[in-house]
Image 1: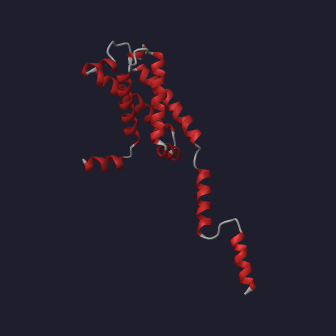
Image 2: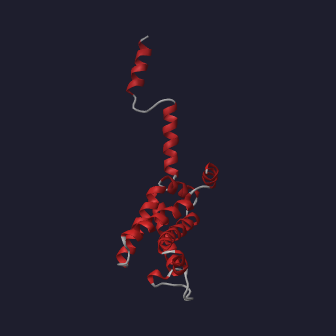
Image 3: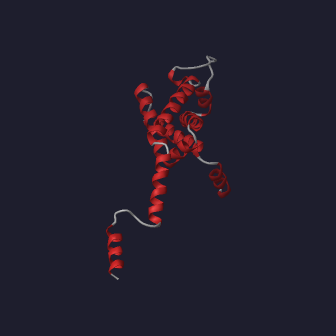
Length: 173
């Protein structure tokens, strides 16, 4: 009987978990080591954003950069509808290109890390971009910023949504 009591006391005093919790902790630590770091994902997202910015700014003459000097580019096309539509669509196009490129630059595990922090990633990229645009151009108003931010969030969200979620959303409408 004393051996059983000593065994129980040594078990209670042992700091390492026993049984299924030990196995689950081991699996969790192994998965955490295999997942890419958030900094690596953020760096690749930043690279995708830089390439996306170059492509977007080359196809929109709002900031004076155009790839093709045809006189009629995306900004003029969107402005033909309305200025409100232009602000929203420019933001949607801008971040949709960024997250589409990120989808190509990131491997599956990195994309899953990005999806876990999707709201934070979209908000940070959109707000930093809007801040830079506000610093570059004095024509960014409160109204245009809100519309641009709405469009940018919507465009990025549409690029990150899975096909299954999108189909379920369409069926619910």
